[in-house]
Length: 192
Image 1 (cartoon, rainbow, N blue to C red):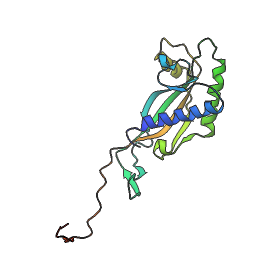
Image 2: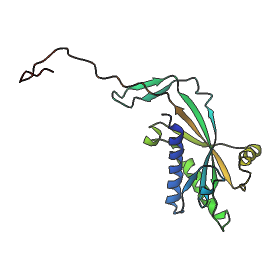
Image 3: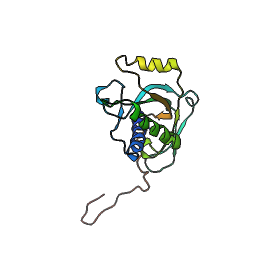
Image 4: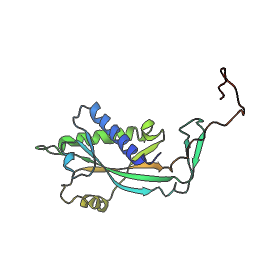
């Protein structure tokens, strides 16, 4: 993936959650950002990237990808960084209502990610990013929520998306090789 990998994975995860809500006719959009952002008001779900670390088991491995331009052979990248992205999916807020109806939205999100845990396709550069539940201890949940002292605690679940590769900039694609050397005269005396 490119330097846009974090953005692309977040967008793909948001789209997956949004599709699950739309299929169940739950109004509203999935908000991406901090839990205490005023723009999150009315969103049934909030997706927050709260932690990012290098993937320890893949850190010293090369990353093999299909070359984006012809020839579409395998390109081996040695300076790529595999990341683990940790997301918190939280029920949103609906003014004047309890959290109870929003628990259905969270249940749909959990079912969607359990049924189809891999993000694939053009949105993630045709790679596979596996999304799995990340169990959090009470202390870890408290640390995350302490980032938002003004926000009331709401039901949340954590997910890990891995691996997310940040690849170096690709070198320019070389031009076609010269196959013939010579000087031709065109009609009218113009040379090429």
